[in-house]
Image 1 (cartoon, protein in one colour):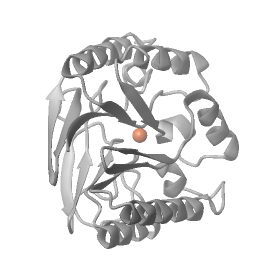
Image 2 (cartoon, helix red, strand yellow):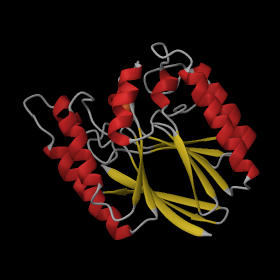
Image 3 (tube, protein in one colour):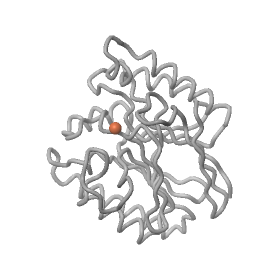
Image 4 (cartoon, helix red, strand yellow):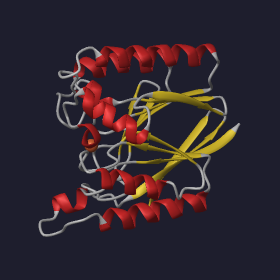
Length: 251
Ligand SMILES: [Fe+2]
């Protein structure tokens, strides 16, 4: 079975202006997201998954409306994961509810061509202090999903979320850039136990690829404003039976 899909990350409408004094509005993001959409339509993938930070200001409903309008121009199915900018770094229930009303469920899974795709809300894992127990629920959800994927003989199990697990070493210190060790180690154990193919993340606005046991941890640059050396871009992932190939394509 072969198929291809696209990962996009951090459209984050309003982020460019937040980093450039004197600039207002979301023209930068509209231009780049529109380019990403037309490039994707040319590639004609089976679907697109976006790994969070859909908007810069979660209280700005106009940003949310426009990001949805731009995505609706895709010729294929598309799936969203939430990011910290969509919820705040320490989300409350009302933040999660607002996100769900706009964009749909914040954690869920689907199957495609004998592969399983699991979408998580990593901000809940990053700081559950205002929503006690939600991190535990989410880890339980992940465990149940991985177990059912295994029972269904999924050829690949893949996870999509906003925050990377780590940048270079599994035991590196907690920081704003990665999931804290408490939650990180639980997920790393599950990756190993279920032989997860790959984890796709964003949040850094630059590319970073590391390996944990048999799992590829792929952090992709943004479709809008980059913070590293990488240009804005999208990642195309091609699955051909056991093989997985992926490439970051600048816009
Ligand atoms: Fe982020």
